[in-house]
Length: 281
Image (cartoon, helix red, strand yellow):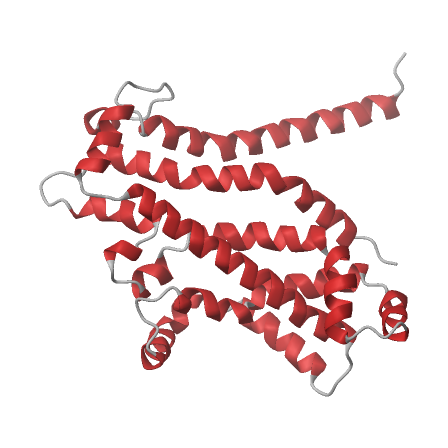
């Protein structure tokens, strides 16, 4: 006979699996509907939701091209912006986090608390002042206005600080100093290799955030040749007489493909990064 303990454990595990399966459906169904709508015509979309792909995929793609949208150029713009933003975010955020964790100085606690406050302030509240600041610097309609501010990415610094506090071994830093390594050398040769899981996790989030960044880019970028892929898709709604929903859905589906690929390739680092960050030495 199965004991009550084993039966209870089995039921608990069964309920957990059911919950995870429901969460999986909640995550996948909207993406699947988006992909399916990319294969349907505007008339079919207006008739209701369908889970079965239609036959208008190439019609929608040709419609995208007929609107004069340079999708390859938009894709390259998004890729460049996302890659540069990710590199800047990860490198400088980890360096700032390393300084906050390793060095002891006056105001250290105040700066850490200030970072937490900045994480909770939405970008939309400061966009007017930010735009005026970029305009005074002459950086409007320039990718630098979207990349350089990420040197001070409060969310990434907070994540890096939490990660380094949980895995940093002071003895390794002291050993590097005894061997004559500079502080930058210690950061590059000791800390960066140890922080690879956390850095990749930060990189994934930074890449996705930059790739999906429509609001800031729409405010700061005005030249259509510099438009990112989400911005190009948005221009399809400018048709006064008819909104081609099928083409819009196809464009949106194309924008999520790189995100899915990046996440699929590097998702294991998220798990290992969280696992390492949960262990205290």
